[in-house]
Image (cartoon, rainbow, N blue to C red; front, side, top):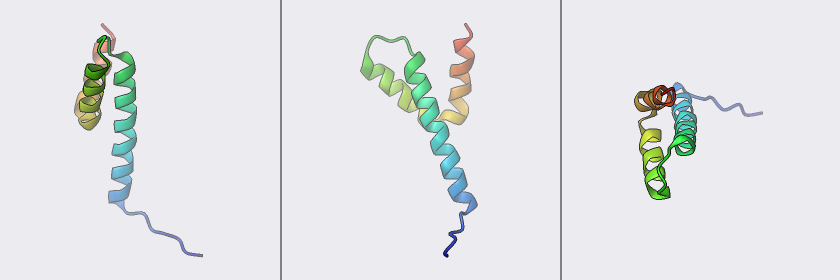
Length: 63
């Protein structure tokens, strides 16, 4: 039985990927722009920079 070791870097990539997917999906769902292209662009940009920009999205949802 071969047990594959998972490195710390793989955990970091997994966490970042899951966070990016969640941030992109939620940003797309809550954006109010009528254009799908703008909503998609916005969600992709937020997803790529989610550790810094997604908390701002969540804060703006309160207002």
